[in-house]
Length: 600
Ligand code: F6R
Image 1 (cartoon, rainbow, N blue to C red):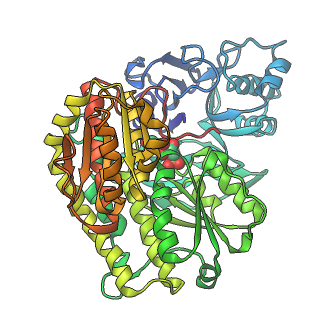
Image 2 (image 1 turned 180 degrees about the vertical axis):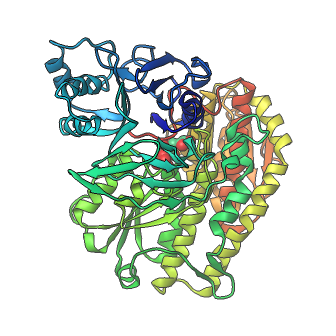
């Protein structure tokens, strides 16, 4: 939701922290700020994007913390931007998360402290001010203060005359980067990946003192070690590489992302799938139910695979919005697997659903893109989707990799349960193997999709219709268009149109119909006829069925079996992108949205 970064070392901290913030801007971009530490504290902050933040190019400071904000408490103004300071401007704090009891704390502090912002965060520097008056170390002061905080937080603190940075983690991610005589800290490795890939992930309750030559981590009063891991990271993968937007680059990366997702996991001959999942086979064989919990695009990926799982793995499957999740009675937790799908691994609603499942005694599996993210710690087992870094706020390549990974899991589970024959497995695995090539064909058709998008870019309302897995793609494609173009877009099960929404359809409502074979196209054709007869222009996304006489425009996708609707989704990602681009929208950073939603 917000992004934090920090640096201690021999280089000028201002420049490094500023670069780190630019890399984290996808986490929040309505205001930004840095505090340069050492003998004195210098704060520079303002509303607006990180690039608008100005401060002296060479500051002479070698300690720095920074923040890019996505507002929750208080409007995006200079006063509410982080870092926040104490009354003497000697302590600076950046924070990601929410301090739930800030109102009580503020009331208590207000008699002796002057508050400048409406944020929950500002209580922290004032609490620290009182603790440091007792002449304790900065680490000890942070330790005392976090005992008083309720909620979720990742904090980074620097104070005049105190060595380095102190950070604390409770339910919001923090990762430390190890360089030579320098250390980094951030919400996400992206912030400092170009400097080091040696990292350690902090755990809940950790408080770390980071100086240029050491990192000391305490938890519950004792010194603890957190393993230093080397993250595989191609720093150039997090750059735009000549594309106008990250989203466009990520759309074009999908063939490669899918190859990475599938690599080494499929045995074509035996029809088997190899997945490194820490769940015993007898347990998987005894399962009666799977509950998928997720939000937004990840929820749509869950909907996509539900039918495949039920059909092939012979198991009951429900897909639940994580924010609505409740482990209802009447279910046998021992025979229920809860699968959390989350690209970031940090979505608060999804983590909260997962924790409820853990408490209820069910086993849990995480499907995520982010190594070391909170979900990987909270779930019993993890399956990585391996899509590579995704910076654009609108999820694209992670959606297709989520669907592909969940489909691999379907085959794996179905085979372990003895529910799927080799020939059934081969049909799905062939379709998966054909995905990268089929997606590339859609990308090669970009100019046609762009021309159609430009033609319809003035419409204010778009309907998407589909059936079966095509329905989940209709929902996902509508979400993509609305979040980046700000136009009204809605996905419907094609058969539901006549039960109400048809009343809204007229000649100004383009209808995008998922007409791929496996999206039960022949039945959707009836819905297309219904909207055509109300004058609506129709864009069909189709494989081999002949719809050109029926639709006004057609995007072709290759006939590759059960994965066809995923390919159709790629065509509609491009359509959404070009509509939004034609309108001049802020595509990588749509208004009001952030990449990682770490508040419930
Ligand atoms: C939309 C989008 C969001 C996310 C949702 C869940 O393009 O990206 O709807 O899918 O916020 O995020 P993760 O997958 O990180 O849990």
